[in-house]
Amino acid sequence: MNIRVRIYGDIANTLGTKHLLQLPRGATVKHLTNHLAAKTGQTRQGHLGEFKVGGPDLAIMINGRNIQLLDGPDTQLHDQDDVVIMPFVVGG
Image (cartoon, rainbow, N blue to C red; front, side):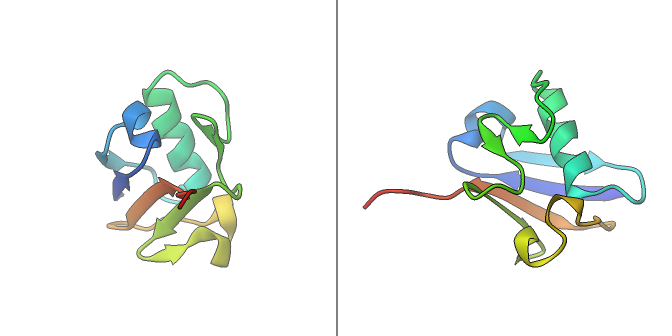
């Protein structure tokens, strides 16, 4: 299945800003983030750079819905899903 991924903020410097990924049926957000991490040489499972997937500092949206309102990192992906990954902005 094809998944479109857009990445914003500091994490985009490491992972790149746009990806079109082909993932197997039944893949989850956890599979997606581990795949992205591996493409950039990161080996720490469950993390993108310094951010924990499903943690409080990283927002992951699927078709406009935060994964925290779904099944977190275990949220299943579907063909043609649009995923946005961004760290929360802090400051004022």
